[in-house]
Image 1 (cartoon, rainbow, N blue to C red):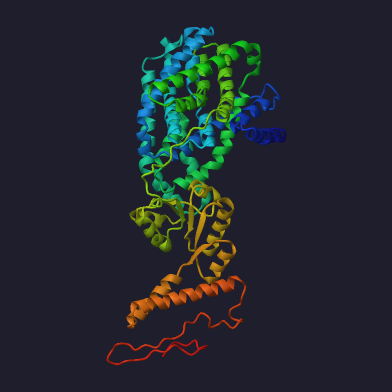
Image 2 (cartoon, rainbow, N blue to C red):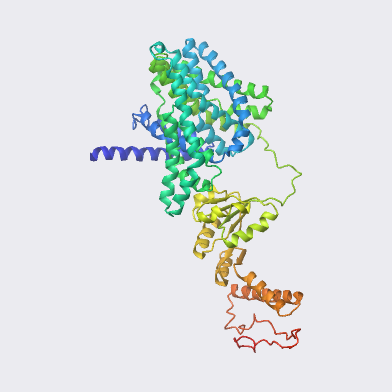
Length: 605
């Protein structure tokens, strides 16, 4: 038993070591992390060092990385935005799918494959790797740009098409006549039913579930809830014969407008990154170098010919549908590879006798090599082709009317601050941990998200790296200090604005380099004093002048204290006390109010 445990521990260390040593090198060479993971997988796989002999087992677990990645993407896709992509999904996506399928089938037939085998091999190559392309888009910062959104729409269609493709393979197989004709219909109805269950649960159950979990104030429970949603959605889609990644994506879309969106993204992110890297390692291990060595010429020709044919088809479809040369070429250079669903399609074809095991191994090798070469092609294109100009904001949008503010804390102070921002239509993201307050704040015009501002991953998910201003409006000095320490180190370009508790807290903020800080009660107390003077008969202008005098004296005292001058021992104890100005109250019984003598702290009489 100890030997088995030690063996498993050794394999885990070897896997992590290979990734840690190789991936940074490829990133430094600007070849991308994906290629580094693939090469590391080849090295530790069964055909080089032989540390791992069952890549399928690792791929089965690592596929959860793709699932979580699609969930995070779904969180960024609001339903209205996804609906706006429908023409791309069923227009550009469907036409590209058909064009690539036809071109690749012809290429596979020219390379000597029988027509049915050529069709299956080609359709497997059409199904682009969602994980690799999404990672490349994320690394280049184009995931949320319009061209990147087109690619996402096409990938969604390809995820959906795997189900009818499996049905076609079953129908084309030599043994299909032994199966009942109702099986494809039953499978289709099962898939539709599972999708409907997920939509209903996501619409009416998920948000109440997370509200209950958030009230528990136990971070681990909320994290477990996030994992439950992702894996549960994936399992439901798998039971329906659909893609697990598609189920996770749908769950993410359903939660994209939830108040818990940023917290969920932060909780899933560590698992996503680790498992996605493991997936790429597993793909590298799956490359059968024995097949490549024996059939090296056909495999090499197959990789080159199919990648070129797919690039040509993608470029041609893009140009025919009105895309510019640069955009069509970018998409062609981004998607000339096969994907992980090809392994499922080929295995199904081999199991039904439609494809021999040798054909399965050869086409699998072609797909894996294309997945390894795609990051190189993309990196080379980025290095030598002219950079695509991202459209700027229209010139007729007045500057200054919108900004990017992350507000942490939406209590009484934050709610008052928000009114000025609302009046100028400023774009604000607000996070807080008070579930009841979040539910009650929907009428303010902001979308309030659940999130712990003391966690770096939550701040990243909430967009702190893009914010121009980070407004810390929490009512706890300790919490504020923690957030400031994180934000100053992580987001130095953002302007910090801090709500402070008292003078001592403000002095601490100034010492830390926070230039904009405001005591939570100082201005309101000054205003209160001005109102009291007006009520006593002092003209409003004079009351405002008194308040300004007190404000200026307080600022001077603050500056002296910040410089290290002890105002009490330096004879400045009365420095802040304004000089009394007697006045007569305009009533029938005139009374004169006097300030107390210097040094007397008793109230005026």
